[in-house]
Length: 459
Image 1 (cartoon, rainbow, N blue to C red):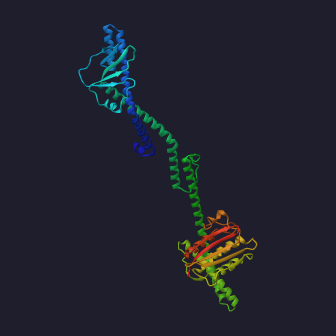
Image 2 (cartoon, rainbow, N blue to C red):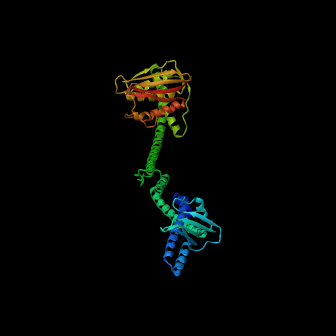
């Protein structure tokens, strides 16, 4: 349980907070210990001065002896010496029989204690300190005392233990408070988001829930709102995929039956193409080509549903004838639209005739639908040989495409408006162009019209 807690983000946060607080305490410990050492000497200097004054006021030997014993026991001072009216007086104790005496001057104006001497207080316990200090009483000109180094060592060790215990207590309290605040502000909201992500992973189609962190103005709130937007986007994509799958199944069924109907129509059109009347035979030939295209489209849809790609049959085609046939078949429903084919009759391209026909049929139909209610409506097709490619341009003088449509014009189900449009024509046209090794793009669209560019392979 403890190992699991420490391995988590909450436990790591608590442990790191305690460690950082202890490090901060360690940084300030040495200046604090140096100050404690100096104050320790000053306190004994003050006590020694008061003792000297008290002994002068207590002439009886019994009182002097009692004060001396109590003072030495409380302060660990072994000798006190003063100077009064220029005369040196030994107030307490006798000089020790040792030469290991270190002199320390703590009078005003003297430099403070250094870090090295502070550290040595923890290790040195043999010998004495001879401390020179300012006397607390005006009649005393100077004051000095002797104190064993072992007394300072014990005091420093006790001080260190107290500081260590206090530091640990401060670190634990600070860590607990910081942990509680951060858990409420960060850890707990992150756990909520983690649970929401796990639930969404388990069931992406479940209804979206209003998250408790949604209204926050900080980074947690931004993350929560971004996750909600992602959920909505994924669910929308899944719903669209489901609709497309259902639509694909329905289209496959329709095309399966449509192929059978077109097969019957193909037999009739073949009989018409063999009629002795030349006019009837020509109409029959056009009907044969139209039915053949319908059959191929139906078969292509069925093959696409079975994950088989439609293969382009590349050959040399007369681009002007393909464009004219597509225009004649398409613009019969739009008598008010004028068509102008400016392609050189001798210009040929390496492409699939049916694919190219369907591309221009889609482009011409889209242009005619946009132009049908406008006066002087006209669709123009041009083409040029660009070396290893043939570039064809289809333009109209229509109202142009809406701004929001231009960036997604080749995305499925994106339409420029109008009834009866599926939003698949340009998507299919691009796929047909790419299948032939070409491409199709929007050259421009504004209030003066719209222009598309089709690139095919040259002979």
